[in-house]
Length: 242
Picture 1 (cartoon, rainbow, N blue to C red):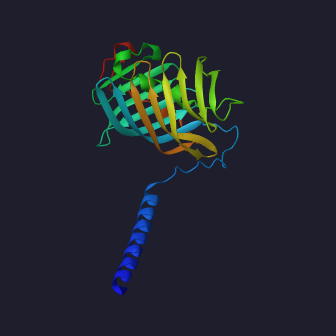
Picture 2: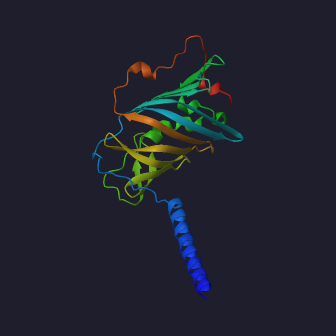
Picture 3: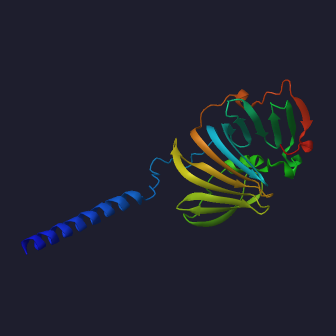
């Protein structure tokens, strides 16, 4: 009888230990998303300049391209994006200066220049051409913490903005362009989304992730200059899919 009682005690203890172990295991697996600390945000401060390493994933039709690179941006309408091969050579450079777009492909010795409206829809580059609009992501004055608002943006176009907990999570245009903002961080007193998910009116999709970005530092003019020496120059309108 004593052995049977002792066995029941051991079984009960083992069962209890097993429950404790399972509880610890599952409590370690289920993690909550840390709440963003906005105490360091400076009201009214904006992203005036941005420089950052980037990871880019592009899907256009049946084509999927991904890679790493570097991007610089200056408000309101200057941007340069350099895409690199796994070996560190430049695959493509994109420069936006107001409405003027430059696309350079050093490996093929070609560059295409022109007004952004001349960019053919089938080239798979429409998402990159959206970056000026995407990076201008200021919270409208008197915007609600949660909800949808409309405003006329810096390009004079009406846009729809979705806010959640005081953050812009999505912007869209009536023409079909859309961007989602994810993984916010506070940099130099400014809320900055570390991941941008873009979709053009033609259905091209780009996911751009910032890596160790710096904002509101001085950027020299040459940082926005695309080297065109030795490249054959063509109108943007004749660009074919790469």
